[in-house]
Image 1: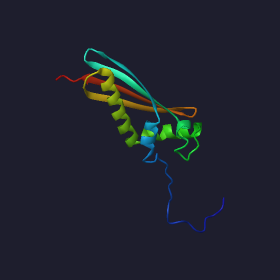
Image 2: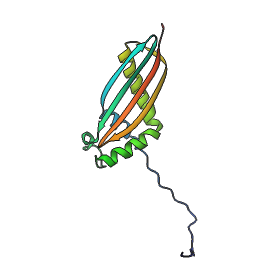
Image 3: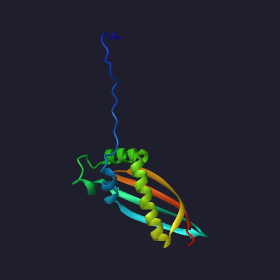
Image 4: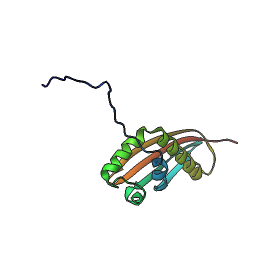
Length: 131
């Protein structure tokens, strides 16, 4: 073991997070597939956003590969901006599929990668809003 004769006064930390523009870019490039139905007055549905990073290659400087998709999926799950925007998309799609206004929503946001694709699952449970 080598003995340290001098030490830094500063501890450094490197952090990586999704860029502010990433949320709009990823959601804007997504293919959207939604399904759902009522059981009584309870609506349950899901929206799948599939982002093929190759479709974003003209807009991003990162390689549109599996490594980038994996990193984006990991960071998406912990990014509050992403979850908020994802919930807004999920509720918009749920209202469209339900054909009515919904209340007391609960939205789960999941993200994963499959090759160079980012897969975002937005699962919704909500009550039919009574007029």
